[in-house]
Length: 218
Image 1 (cartoon, helix red, strand yellow):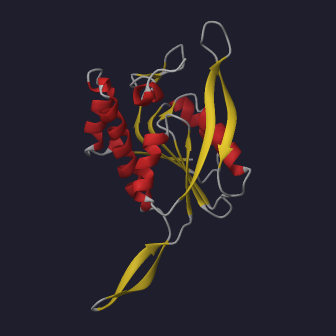
Image 2 (cartoon, one colour):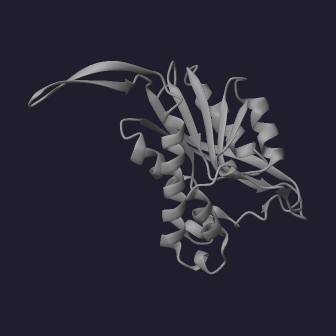
Image 3 (cartoon, one colour):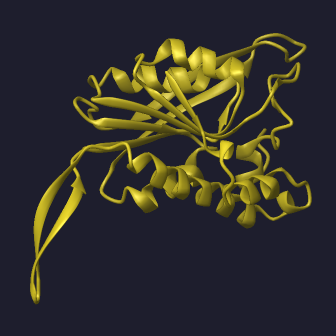
């Protein structure tokens, strides 16, 4: 699996990331969600350059224009609930895409909350047969949720190409996902952080993305 780290080159994405990490900025959920969405928009633009294109003629009121248009049938899928604003950012760019939704969430499997399992409960998605599948989820920590989402979606067909997109990743999660997806898949991330703490949260990260976007859960 190829990994593309957007923050390897300077861009406005670095400002959005800095704000997402800032404890004071996090107090405003709307601002936090907007920055997740904006990173999704910019990452989708970068990813769009990897699609297959073909020239087409388009009739204008004054003549004919030759344009290069994407040929891929795109499915944008996300992991509920933290992935929703990131998903919206991708849809702002891939506005003709089909959509998939997977409920895959972490569960601690020991009393100390140091071991994590993943439970997949619900999926609503079209067939991904022959299509370009983009799975978006802001946090790639253990990699379990992303791997489970791909495995669930892959049951609907064999995609032409697979892209994994996240805001923050860690090496452990990248390794797990790399073993689950096809070898020619691509991982897109805004930044790679060093690792996780004993409770499997990314450090320094920015905390629980779902809670920061929508409020704490029971």
